[in-house]
Image 1: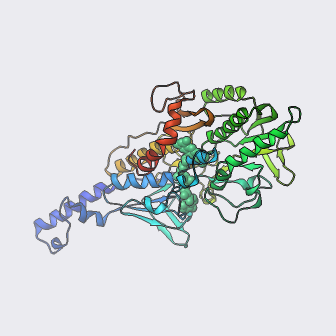
Image 2: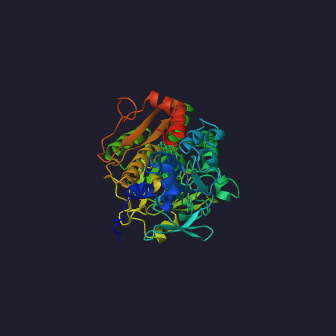
Image 3: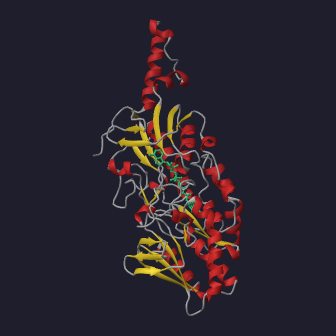
Amino acid sequence: MKKETKQMNRRQMLKLTAAAGAGAVLMGSEANANAPKANSKEAISKKNPLHIAIIGGGMAGTALAYRLSRAITYPVITLYEPQERSCWYQPGLTMLGTGLWPIADLSYERDNYIPMHVTLKKEAVNAIDPENVSVTEANGKEVHYDYIIVATGLQLDFDAIEGLDSNITSLEHLDKLPVWMNDEAIGSVYYLHGAFRLSLQLDKVVEKAQKASKKEKLHVFFTQSGIRTKSPAAAKSVLLTLTQRLEKANLRDRVAISFITEDGKLSENKHYDKRYRILMKKEGVNIITDSLTAIDAGNQKATFEKQGTLPYDFIHITPPMKAATFLETAGLLDENGLVHVDKNTLEHNAYPKLFAIGDIVGCNTLKSASAINEQVKVITDTIRAIDEGEKPKAHYDGYGSDTMLCPEKKSAMIEAWNYKGTPLSPMISLDPMQCHGIYWYTTLYLSKSYIMQGVLRGWA
Ligand SMILES: Cc1cc2nc3c(=O)[nH]c(=O)nc-3n(C[C@H](O)[C@H](O)[C@H](O)COP(=O)(O)OP(=O)(O)OC[C@H]3O[C@@H](n4cnc5c(N)ncnc54)[C@H](O)[C@@H]3O)c2cc1C
């Protein structure tokens, strides 16, 4: 239920406190020695700091911590993040998986990305009480805040596919891997170990194709899950890497490739959807609407909801992605399993002191770092305005972008759009629905500095 928030904003309280201090000085009261001087930010801040919790120190939570800490006067920001390397450069997984970058190019430590004056708590939040604006920390302690921002990203849900039990929810796990994660015929660019092995796995497919015949083709599948997928273009980059390597070896006709899309879409945007269909046709890829339900790794068989069980020589899996369970328990999710926010303000639709940012937001937008860069500005400005007694004006327009690489051709297409749905040219006015060499260059050589130094540190 939406709570009424007619409390005095902090800025009004600060002014009152200052006025009270000034009054005390004039009256020569006993309190005047300790009273804060009028307009002395330092003195009054200690009495009324704004307490903000950010849950999740990945791309979104970190960028927001930086921006908020600069925009608000004396905020007390607590960032909850249990993972040491929460700042992995995730877009680099595409470059790693397609054999363009080494693994070291993705590695960033969380502790090097904590803004001054922000308190890092190296633990998870276990529960949120949205009515009381409080969180329960992993140690069981309940802590109240003025605002809570959910930046927990999406968990990889391999376990939803029978035979792929993993307990792996994030990108980073390298130890205690289940056996299937080292299976040559199962790949995925969406987590670190998967991306690390992928380029060699694609080479193996090319090797195998040499032994196949045109009649008895190899069978390769690429799966795409629904609306909760982050960077759906990444799987398409892997597909293009494979088709191009096969073409180069003159073996493309030895491999049947199917792209399996759970909701029948290739993009949430109809213009790009059309564009990807043209591209897939050109690459000789079958598009099938279906959903992967099980994998029998030992026998190299995949079971789909509609097509039944089929043999595969290689399968690239985009795992289903989901919100952390505690968000569901707190009743914060919409019908798509994402945090139910106002698409313009990113404020929760039922709880005005709660915002969400990043991959976890329930807006029709590309789940991407570029979307985060816009969202950070909106939440920061909204909280700052409320704090200063102004009417919040900032609105998120739904912008997001995602890169699809064509490695052998050294070009890339940047899928970019906002709520209006019109394809946008992200850098210079080139046809936004075509691959361009300049996008290849920027993706490989410029984007990382922009994201890691600009977006993540809240300067971009
Ligand atoms: C293969 C791939 C390619 C991509 N390509 C592009 C691209 O070309 N362009 C682009 O703009 N973007 C791209 N992205 C997307 C971009 O990287 C993500 O959108 C972005 O990293 C999401 O940030 P986030 O903070 O929302 O989530 P994350 O970075 O996943 O961070 C969430 C954090 O929350 C923490 N957390 C979770 N639960 C809790 C809890 N209970 N308590 C405390 N902390 C918690 C986690 O430990 C995690 O560190 C790509 C992503 C991938 C995987």
